Amino acid sequence: MAHLLIVDDEPSICWGLQRLAQQMGHTATTAASAEQALPLARQHRPDAVVMDVRLPGMDGLTALKMLHAELGPMPVIVITAFGDLAVAVEAVRSGAFDYLTKPFELKAAERALHRALESAQRPAKADAPPAAGATAEDQIVGRSPIMQELFKRIALVAPTEACVHLHGQSGTGKELVARALHRYSRRKDRPFVAVNLAALSPTLIESELFGHTEGAFTGADRPRKGLLEAADGGTLFLDEVADIPQAVQTKLLRALEYGEVLPVGADRPRRVDFRLITATNRDLRRRMAEGKFRHDLYYRICTFDIEIPPLAQRRDDIPELVEHFVNLLSAKHGLPRPAVAPETMQELLRRPWHGNVRELRNTMEHALVLARGNIILPEHLPPPASPSPPELSQEDSLQMLLRQWAETELGRTPETANVYEKFLQLVEPPLLEAALKQAQGQYAAAARRLGLHRITLRKKLQQYGISKSGNTSAE
Image (cartoon, rainbow, N blue to C red; front, side, top):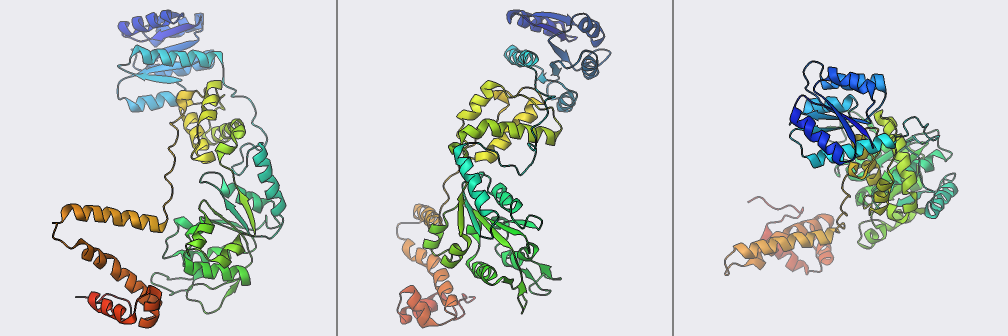
Protein backbone atom coordinates (compact mmCIF):
# COMPACT_ATOMS: atom_id res chain seq x y z
CA MET A 1 0.00 0.00 0.00
CA ALA A 2 1.37 3.39 -1.04
CA HIS A 3 0.77 6.87 0.34
CA LEU A 4 -0.20 9.73 -2.01
CA LEU A 5 -0.21 13.50 -1.55
CA ILE A 6 -2.84 15.36 -3.62
CA VAL A 7 -2.49 19.14 -3.93
CA ASP A 8 -5.23 21.18 -5.68
CA ASP A 9 -7.30 24.21 -4.75
CA GLU A 10 -10.44 22.62 -6.23
CA PRO A 11 -12.11 20.46 -3.52
CA SER A 12 -13.89 18.30 -6.11
CA ILE A 13 -10.59 17.25 -7.72
CA CYS A 14 -9.03 16.47 -4.33
CA TRP A 15 -12.08 14.41 -3.35
CA GLY A 16 -12.18 12.50 -6.64
CA LEU A 17 -8.45 11.68 -6.65
CA GLN A 18 -8.54 10.68 -2.97
CA ARG A 19 -11.43 8.26 -3.66
CA LEU A 20 -9.50 6.88 -6.65
CA ALA A 21 -6.41 6.28 -4.50
CA GLN A 22 -8.53 4.45 -1.90
CA GLN A 23 -10.14 2.28 -4.59
CA MET A 24 -6.62 1.37 -5.79
CA GLY A 25 -5.80 0.26 -2.24
CA HIS A 26 -3.68 3.27 -1.20
CA THR A 27 -3.91 6.07 1.34
CA ALA A 28 -4.03 9.74 0.37
CA THR A 29 -3.70 13.14 2.03
CA THR A 30 -5.03 16.31 0.38
CA ALA A 31 -3.93 19.93 0.55
CA ALA A 32 -5.34 23.11 -1.02
CA SER A 33 -1.99 24.91 -1.44
CA ALA A 34 1.72 24.25 -1.71
CA GLU A 35 2.25 25.93 1.64
CA GLN A 36 -0.02 23.31 3.26
CA ALA A 37 1.42 20.44 1.23
CA LEU A 38 5.13 20.87 2.06
CA PRO A 39 4.77 20.32 5.87
CA LEU A 40 2.52 17.31 5.21
CA ALA A 41 5.16 15.83 2.89
CA ARG A 42 7.88 16.36 5.51
CA GLN A 43 5.80 14.63 8.18
CA HIS A 44 4.89 11.62 6.00
CA ARG A 45 6.99 11.27 2.85
CA PRO A 46 4.60 10.37 0.02
CA ASP A 47 5.33 7.65 -2.53
CA ALA A 48 3.85 9.89 -5.24
CA VAL A 49 2.42 13.41 -5.52
CA VAL A 50 -0.39 14.79 -7.68
CA MET A 51 -0.13 18.59 -7.84
CA ASP A 52 -1.86 21.38 -9.73
CA VAL A 53 0.42 23.94 -11.36
CA ARG A 54 -1.74 26.97 -10.61
CA LEU A 55 -2.16 27.20 -6.85
CA PRO A 56 -2.87 30.14 -4.54
CA GLY A 57 0.42 31.45 -3.21
CA MET A 58 3.39 29.29 -4.23
CA ASP A 59 2.91 27.76 -7.68
CA GLY A 60 3.13 24.03 -8.27
CA LEU A 61 6.40 24.07 -10.22
CA THR A 62 8.21 25.87 -7.42
CA ALA A 63 6.78 23.40 -4.93
CA LEU A 64 7.85 20.51 -7.15
CA LYS A 65 11.47 21.70 -7.10
CA MET A 66 11.36 22.16 -3.32
CA LEU A 67 9.98 18.66 -2.83
CA HIS A 68 12.78 17.16 -4.88
CA ALA A 69 15.41 19.27 -3.12
CA GLU A 70 14.21 18.41 0.40
CA LEU A 71 12.92 14.84 0.05
CA GLY A 72 14.84 13.50 -2.92
CA PRO A 73 13.50 12.04 -6.17
CA MET A 74 9.85 11.06 -6.15
CA PRO A 75 7.28 10.80 -8.96
CA VAL A 76 5.19 13.98 -9.21
CA ILE A 77 2.17 14.07 -11.53
CA VAL A 78 1.43 17.65 -12.50
CA ILE A 79 -2.08 18.86 -13.36
CA THR A 80 -2.17 21.61 -15.98
CA ALA A 81 -4.92 23.67 -17.53
CA PHE A 82 -6.28 22.39 -20.84
CA GLY A 83 -4.11 23.53 -23.74
CA ASP A 84 -1.46 25.16 -21.49
CA LEU A 85 1.43 23.68 -23.47
CA ALA A 86 4.09 26.09 -22.23
CA VAL A 87 3.39 25.16 -18.61
CA ALA A 88 3.36 21.45 -19.49
CA VAL A 89 6.78 21.74 -21.12
CA GLU A 90 8.18 23.62 -18.14
CA ALA A 91 6.72 20.96 -15.81
CA VAL A 92 8.57 18.25 -17.68
CA ARG A 93 11.79 20.26 -17.55
CA SER A 94 11.33 20.73 -13.81
CA GLY A 95 11.28 16.98 -13.26
CA ALA A 96 7.59 16.08 -13.38
CA PHE A 97 7.00 12.36 -13.89
CA ASP A 98 3.82 12.90 -15.90
CA TYR A 99 1.11 15.46 -16.35
CA LEU A 100 -2.65 15.50 -16.73
CA THR A 101 -4.53 18.20 -18.61
CA LYS A 102 -7.87 19.44 -17.28
CA PRO A 103 -10.45 18.11 -17.75
CA PHE A 104 -9.14 14.57 -17.39
CA GLU A 105 -10.83 11.22 -16.94
CA LEU A 106 -10.24 9.19 -13.80
CA LYS A 107 -9.05 6.31 -15.98
CA ALA A 108 -6.22 8.50 -17.25
CA ALA A 109 -5.36 9.51 -13.68
CA GLU A 110 -5.42 5.86 -12.59
CA ARG A 111 -2.98 4.87 -15.34
CA ALA A 112 -0.66 7.76 -14.44
CA LEU A 113 -0.75 6.84 -10.75
CA HIS A 114 -0.05 3.19 -11.53
CA ARG A 115 3.01 4.13 -13.61
CA ALA A 116 4.24 6.57 -10.97
CA LEU A 117 3.96 4.08 -8.11
CA GLU A 118 5.57 1.34 -10.17
CA SER A 119 8.44 3.74 -10.89
CA ALA A 120 8.84 4.47 -7.18
CA GLN A 121 8.98 0.75 -6.35
CA ARG A 122 11.37 -0.05 -9.21
CA PRO A 123 13.83 2.88 -9.36
CA ALA A 124 15.79 3.51 -12.54
CA LYS A 125 19.48 2.60 -12.70
CA ALA A 126 20.46 6.25 -13.08
CA ASP A 127 23.76 5.99 -11.24
CA ALA A 128 25.07 2.81 -12.89
CA PRO A 129 28.22 3.53 -14.92
CA PRO A 130 27.91 2.93 -18.65
CA ALA A 131 29.72 0.00 -20.18
CA ALA A 132 33.13 0.79 -21.61
CA GLY A 133 32.81 2.08 -25.15
CA ALA A 134 29.04 1.72 -25.11
CA THR A 135 28.46 5.32 -26.15
CA ALA A 136 30.53 5.06 -29.35
CA GLU A 137 28.35 5.99 -32.32
CA ASP A 138 30.17 3.60 -34.61
CA GLN A 139 30.02 0.53 -32.39
CA ILE A 140 28.53 -2.60 -33.99
CA VAL A 141 26.56 -4.50 -31.35
CA GLY A 142 25.69 -8.19 -31.46
CA ARG A 143 26.63 -11.58 -30.03
CA SER A 144 24.44 -13.87 -32.14
CA PRO A 145 26.15 -16.49 -34.34
CA ILE A 146 25.19 -14.60 -37.51
CA MET A 147 26.87 -11.46 -36.17
CA GLN A 148 29.96 -13.41 -35.17
CA GLU A 149 30.24 -14.53 -38.78
CA LEU A 150 29.92 -10.89 -39.88
CA PHE A 151 32.70 -9.86 -37.49
CA LYS A 152 34.88 -12.64 -38.87
CA ARG A 153 34.44 -11.44 -42.45
CA ILE A 154 35.19 -7.84 -41.44
CA ALA A 155 38.35 -8.97 -39.64
CA LEU A 156 39.50 -10.99 -42.63
CA VAL A 157 39.09 -8.32 -45.30
CA ALA A 158 39.78 -5.11 -43.35
CA PRO A 159 43.61 -5.26 -43.49
CA THR A 160 43.61 -5.89 -47.26
CA GLU A 161 43.16 -3.47 -50.16
CA ALA A 162 40.26 -5.46 -51.69
CA CYS A 163 37.13 -3.61 -52.79
CA VAL A 164 34.26 -4.63 -50.53
CA HIS A 165 30.58 -4.64 -51.44
CA LEU A 166 28.01 -4.54 -48.63
CA HIS A 167 24.44 -5.52 -49.24
CA GLY A 168 21.51 -5.68 -46.88
CA GLN A 169 18.15 -4.17 -46.16
CA SER A 170 17.77 -0.48 -45.37
CA GLY A 171 18.61 0.27 -41.75
CA THR A 172 20.87 -2.75 -41.11
CA GLY A 173 23.99 -0.62 -40.53
CA LYS A 174 25.93 -0.71 -43.79
CA GLU A 175 27.79 2.51 -43.03
CA LEU A 176 28.78 1.20 -39.58
CA VAL A 177 30.36 -1.82 -41.26
CA ALA A 178 32.11 0.44 -43.79
CA ARG A 179 33.54 2.56 -40.98
CA ALA A 180 34.70 -0.58 -39.16
CA LEU A 181 36.47 -1.77 -42.31
CA HIS A 182 38.28 1.58 -42.50
CA ARG A 183 39.05 1.66 -38.78
CA TYR A 184 40.80 -1.71 -38.91
CA SER A 185 42.61 -1.08 -42.20
CA ARG A 186 46.08 0.27 -42.93
CA ARG A 187 44.36 3.49 -44.06
CA LYS A 188 42.77 4.19 -40.66
CA ASP A 189 44.69 7.47 -40.20
CA ARG A 190 43.63 8.79 -43.62
CA PRO A 191 40.22 10.20 -44.66
CA PHE A 192 37.00 8.20 -44.64
CA VAL A 193 34.62 9.78 -47.18
CA ALA A 194 31.00 8.56 -47.19
CA VAL A 195 28.79 9.41 -50.17
CA ASN A 196 25.10 8.59 -50.58
CA LEU A 197 24.71 8.52 -54.36
CA ALA A 198 20.92 8.57 -54.16
CA ALA A 199 21.13 11.98 -52.45
CA LEU A 200 23.20 13.55 -55.25
CA SER A 201 21.60 15.37 -58.17
CA PRO A 202 21.81 13.18 -61.33
CA THR A 203 22.98 16.21 -63.30
CA LEU A 204 25.80 17.01 -60.88
CA ILE A 205 26.88 13.56 -59.72
CA GLU A 206 29.87 13.47 -62.10
CA SER A 207 31.10 16.84 -60.86
CA GLU A 208 30.56 15.81 -57.21
CA LEU A 209 32.56 12.61 -57.60
CA PHE A 210 35.32 13.71 -59.98
CA GLY A 211 35.43 17.47 -59.44
CA HIS A 212 35.47 20.18 -62.10
CA THR A 213 37.59 22.98 -63.45
CA GLU A 214 36.68 26.65 -63.46
CA GLY A 215 34.16 27.37 -66.22
CA ALA A 216 33.48 23.67 -66.92
CA PHE A 217 29.74 24.42 -66.90
CA THR A 218 27.35 27.20 -65.97
CA GLY A 219 27.86 28.08 -62.31
CA ALA A 220 31.36 26.53 -62.07
CA ASP A 221 33.00 29.82 -61.05
CA ARG A 222 35.91 28.12 -59.31
CA PRO A 223 37.66 24.73 -59.53
CA ARG A 224 36.49 22.07 -57.12
CA LYS A 225 38.09 18.86 -55.92
CA GLY A 226 35.85 15.81 -56.25
CA LEU A 227 34.99 13.31 -53.54
CA LEU A 228 37.29 10.69 -55.05
CA GLU A 229 40.24 13.05 -54.62
CA ALA A 230 39.03 13.93 -51.12
CA ALA A 231 39.40 10.24 -50.22
CA ASP A 232 42.97 10.08 -51.55
CA GLY A 233 45.03 7.82 -49.29
CA GLY A 234 41.94 6.70 -47.38
CA THR A 235 38.61 4.97 -47.94
CA LEU A 236 35.72 5.97 -50.19
CA PHE A 237 32.30 4.59 -49.22
CA LEU A 238 29.67 4.80 -51.98
CA ASP A 239 26.22 4.03 -50.61
CA GLU A 240 23.32 3.23 -52.96
CA VAL A 241 25.80 2.43 -55.72
CA ALA A 242 22.96 0.95 -57.82
CA ASP A 243 21.83 4.51 -58.55
CA ILE A 244 25.03 5.63 -60.28
CA PRO A 245 24.38 6.71 -63.92
CA GLN A 246 25.95 4.54 -66.62
CA ALA A 247 28.11 7.36 -67.99
CA VAL A 248 29.61 7.87 -64.55
CA GLN A 249 30.06 4.10 -64.12
CA THR A 250 32.60 4.18 -66.95
CA LYS A 251 34.63 6.95 -65.29
CA LEU A 252 34.51 5.19 -61.93
CA LEU A 253 35.79 1.97 -63.50
CA ARG A 254 38.73 3.87 -65.03
CA ALA A 255 39.52 5.46 -61.68
CA LEU A 256 39.65 2.00 -60.10
CA GLU A 257 41.63 0.39 -62.93
CA TYR A 258 44.21 3.12 -63.47
CA GLY A 259 44.15 5.10 -60.21
CA GLU A 260 43.29 8.41 -61.86
CA VAL A 261 40.34 10.78 -62.15
CA LEU A 262 39.48 13.27 -64.86
CA PRO A 263 37.60 16.32 -63.48
CA VAL A 264 34.81 17.74 -65.63
CA GLY A 265 36.38 20.21 -68.07
CA ALA A 266 39.95 19.02 -67.44
CA ASP A 267 42.28 17.72 -70.16
CA ARG A 268 44.65 15.85 -67.85
CA PRO A 269 43.83 13.15 -65.31
CA ARG A 270 44.95 13.34 -61.68
CA ARG A 271 46.41 10.48 -59.68
CA VAL A 272 44.34 9.11 -56.79
CA ASP A 273 44.73 6.23 -54.37
CA PHE A 274 41.71 5.12 -52.37
CA ARG A 275 40.13 1.92 -51.12
CA LEU A 276 36.53 1.51 -52.34
CA ILE A 277 33.65 0.16 -50.27
CA THR A 278 30.20 0.12 -51.88
CA ALA A 279 26.74 -0.70 -50.56
CA THR A 280 23.21 -1.13 -51.79
CA ASN A 281 19.91 -2.64 -50.69
CA ARG A 282 19.06 -3.51 -54.31
CA ASP A 283 19.96 -6.50 -56.46
CA LEU A 284 22.98 -5.50 -58.56
CA ARG A 285 22.82 -8.75 -60.55
CA ARG A 286 19.31 -7.85 -61.64
CA ARG A 287 20.49 -4.37 -62.54
CA MET A 288 23.19 -5.97 -64.68
CA ALA A 289 20.65 -8.25 -66.40
CA GLU A 290 18.52 -5.17 -67.15
CA GLY A 291 21.52 -3.44 -68.72
CA LYS A 292 21.60 -0.72 -66.07
CA PHE A 293 24.87 -1.68 -64.38
CA ARG A 294 28.13 -2.50 -66.14
CA HIS A 295 29.36 -6.08 -65.82
CA ASP A 296 33.00 -5.03 -65.60
CA LEU A 297 32.31 -2.51 -62.86
CA TYR A 298 30.23 -5.05 -60.93
CA TYR A 299 33.06 -7.58 -60.85
CA ARG A 300 35.54 -4.82 -59.96
CA ILE A 301 33.65 -3.54 -56.92
CA CYS A 302 32.42 -6.93 -55.67
CA THR A 303 35.83 -8.45 -54.98
CA PHE A 304 34.68 -9.33 -51.47
CA ASP A 305 30.98 -9.48 -50.59
CA ILE A 306 29.54 -9.00 -47.10
CA GLU A 307 25.86 -9.54 -46.37
CA ILE A 308 24.51 -7.67 -43.35
CA PRO A 309 21.63 -9.58 -41.71
CA PRO A 310 18.29 -7.91 -40.96
CA LEU A 311 17.31 -7.50 -37.32
CA ALA A 312 14.61 -10.16 -37.70
CA GLN A 313 17.38 -12.75 -38.19
CA ARG A 314 19.25 -11.72 -35.05
CA ARG A 315 16.57 -11.25 -32.41
CA ASP A 316 18.92 -12.52 -29.70
CA ASP A 317 20.84 -9.27 -30.12
CA ILE A 318 17.84 -7.03 -29.36
CA PRO A 319 18.39 -6.81 -25.55
CA GLU A 320 22.04 -5.86 -26.06
CA LEU A 321 21.12 -3.34 -28.75
CA VAL A 322 18.47 -1.82 -26.48
CA GLU A 323 21.01 -1.42 -23.68
CA HIS A 324 23.49 0.10 -26.11
CA PHE A 325 20.99 2.66 -27.42
CA VAL A 326 19.76 3.52 -23.91
CA ASN A 327 23.36 4.29 -22.88
CA LEU A 328 24.18 6.15 -26.08
CA LEU A 329 21.02 8.25 -26.33
CA SER A 330 20.60 9.07 -22.65
CA ALA A 331 24.15 10.49 -22.68
CA LYS A 332 23.41 12.36 -25.91
CA HIS A 333 20.28 14.00 -24.51
CA GLY A 334 21.65 14.55 -21.00
CA LEU A 335 19.05 12.27 -19.37
CA PRO A 336 19.49 9.77 -16.51
CA ARG A 337 19.96 6.26 -17.84
CA PRO A 338 16.60 4.50 -17.30
CA ALA A 339 15.76 0.86 -16.83
CA VAL A 340 13.68 -1.02 -19.39
CA ALA A 341 10.66 -2.80 -17.93
CA PRO A 342 10.46 -6.57 -18.65
CA GLU A 343 7.13 -6.14 -20.43
CA THR A 344 8.75 -3.47 -22.64
CA MET A 345 11.54 -5.83 -23.60
CA GLN A 346 8.98 -8.52 -24.43
CA GLU A 347 7.20 -6.06 -26.73
CA LEU A 348 10.49 -5.15 -28.40
CA LEU A 349 11.27 -8.82 -28.96
CA ARG A 350 7.83 -9.39 -30.55
CA ARG A 351 8.00 -6.58 -33.10
CA PRO A 352 8.79 -7.36 -36.77
CA TRP A 353 11.39 -4.54 -37.20
CA HIS A 354 10.85 -3.82 -40.86
CA GLY A 355 13.17 -0.81 -40.44
CA ASN A 356 15.85 -2.97 -38.81
CA VAL A 357 18.39 -1.51 -36.36
CA ARG A 358 17.62 2.05 -37.47
CA GLU A 359 13.99 1.57 -36.44
CA LEU A 360 15.05 0.12 -33.07
CA ARG A 361 17.31 3.11 -32.41
CA ASN A 362 14.52 5.56 -33.30
CA THR A 363 12.10 3.59 -31.11
CA MET A 364 14.41 3.81 -28.10
CA GLU A 365 15.03 7.52 -28.66
CA HIS A 366 11.26 8.11 -28.78
CA ALA A 367 10.82 6.09 -25.57
CA LEU A 368 13.63 7.94 -23.78
CA VAL A 369 12.04 11.31 -24.53
CA LEU A 370 8.69 10.17 -23.09
CA ALA A 371 10.13 8.29 -20.10
CA ARG A 372 12.35 11.24 -19.11
CA GLY A 373 14.81 9.13 -17.13
CA ASN A 374 12.17 6.89 -15.56
CA ILE A 375 11.46 3.27 -16.38
CA ILE A 376 10.71 2.70 -20.07
CA LEU A 377 7.26 1.13 -20.30
CA PRO A 378 5.42 -0.26 -23.35
CA GLU A 379 3.28 2.87 -23.64
CA HIS A 380 6.45 4.90 -24.23
CA LEU A 381 7.13 3.02 -27.48
CA PRO A 382 5.91 4.38 -30.83
CA PRO A 383 3.79 2.12 -33.08
CA PRO A 384 5.76 -0.41 -35.15
CA ALA A 385 6.80 0.76 -38.62
CA SER A 386 4.87 -0.56 -41.60
CA PRO A 387 6.75 -2.67 -44.15
CA SER A 388 8.17 -0.70 -47.05
CA PRO A 389 6.52 -1.40 -50.40
CA PRO A 390 8.70 -3.43 -52.78
CA GLU A 391 10.82 -1.23 -55.04
CA LEU A 392 9.57 -1.23 -58.63
CA SER A 393 11.90 -1.55 -61.57
CA GLN A 394 11.89 1.20 -64.20
CA GLU A 395 9.87 -1.02 -66.53
CA ASP A 396 7.30 -1.84 -63.82
CA SER A 397 6.96 1.83 -62.94
CA LEU A 398 6.48 2.74 -66.60
CA GLN A 399 3.84 0.06 -67.06
CA MET A 400 2.00 1.27 -63.98
CA LEU A 401 1.98 4.88 -65.21
CA LEU A 402 0.84 3.88 -68.71
CA ARG A 403 -1.92 1.72 -67.26
CA GLN A 404 -3.14 4.63 -65.13
CA TRP A 405 -3.06 6.92 -68.19
CA ALA A 406 -4.99 4.40 -70.29
CA GLU A 407 -7.68 3.87 -67.66
CA THR A 408 -8.14 7.63 -67.24
CA GLU A 409 -8.16 8.30 -70.99
CA LEU A 410 -10.60 5.50 -71.83
CA GLY A 411 -12.90 6.68 -69.06
CA ARG A 412 -13.18 10.29 -70.19
CA THR A 413 -13.03 10.17 -74.03
CA PRO A 414 -15.97 9.37 -76.34
CA GLU A 415 -16.21 5.88 -77.84
CA THR A 416 -15.33 7.24 -81.29
CA ALA A 417 -11.97 8.68 -80.14
CA ASN A 418 -8.82 6.96 -81.41
CA VAL A 419 -7.10 6.35 -78.06
CA TYR A 420 -4.53 3.99 -79.59
CA GLU A 421 -3.29 6.67 -81.98
CA LYS A 422 -3.10 9.15 -79.12
CA PHE A 423 -1.09 6.57 -77.15
CA LEU A 424 1.41 6.15 -79.99
CA GLN A 425 1.82 9.92 -80.26
CA LEU A 426 2.63 9.92 -76.56
CA VAL A 427 5.20 7.10 -76.41
CA GLU A 428 6.81 6.97 -79.87
CA PRO A 429 8.47 10.43 -80.12
CA PRO A 430 10.71 10.08 -77.01
CA LEU A 431 11.79 6.60 -78.14
CA LEU A 432 12.64 7.77 -81.65
CA GLU A 433 14.45 10.87 -80.34
CA ALA A 434 16.58 8.81 -77.93
CA ALA A 435 17.48 6.22 -80.61
CA LEU A 436 18.45 8.89 -83.14
CA LYS A 437 20.48 10.82 -80.60
CA GLN A 438 22.37 7.70 -79.50
CA ALA A 439 23.08 6.86 -83.15
CA GLN A 440 24.43 10.40 -83.62
CA GLY A 441 21.82 11.18 -86.29
CA GLN A 442 22.48 8.06 -88.43
CA TYR A 443 19.09 6.80 -89.67
CA ALA A 444 20.35 3.30 -90.55
CA ALA A 445 21.97 2.70 -87.15
CA ALA A 446 18.90 4.03 -85.28
CA ALA A 447 16.56 1.89 -87.39
CA ARG A 448 18.60 -1.25 -86.69
CA ARG A 449 18.50 -0.55 -82.94
CA LEU A 450 14.72 -0.09 -83.08
CA GLY A 451 14.09 -3.06 -85.37
CA LEU A 452 12.51 -0.84 -88.06
CA HIS A 453 13.22 -0.33 -91.73
CA ARG A 454 15.04 2.97 -92.21
CA ILE A 455 12.30 4.21 -94.58
CA THR A 456 9.70 3.49 -91.88
CA LEU A 457 11.82 5.35 -89.34
CA ARG A 458 12.24 8.33 -91.68
CA LYS A 459 8.46 8.54 -92.22
CA LYS A 460 7.79 8.44 -88.48
CA LEU A 461 10.37 11.14 -87.83
CA GLN A 462 8.71 13.32 -90.46
CA GLN A 463 5.29 12.56 -88.96
CA TYR A 464 6.36 13.78 -85.53
CA GLY A 465 8.56 16.61 -86.79
CA ILE A 466 11.75 15.18 -85.30
CA SER A 467 14.98 16.54 -86.76
CA LYS A 468 18.14 14.55 -87.47
CA SER A 469 19.66 15.75 -84.20
CA GLY A 470 16.89 13.97 -82.31
CA ASN A 471 14.96 17.10 -81.31
CA THR A 472 11.30 17.76 -81.99
CA SER A 473 10.82 20.71 -84.32
CA ALA A 474 8.90 23.66 -82.95
CA GLU A 475 5.56 24.14 -84.62
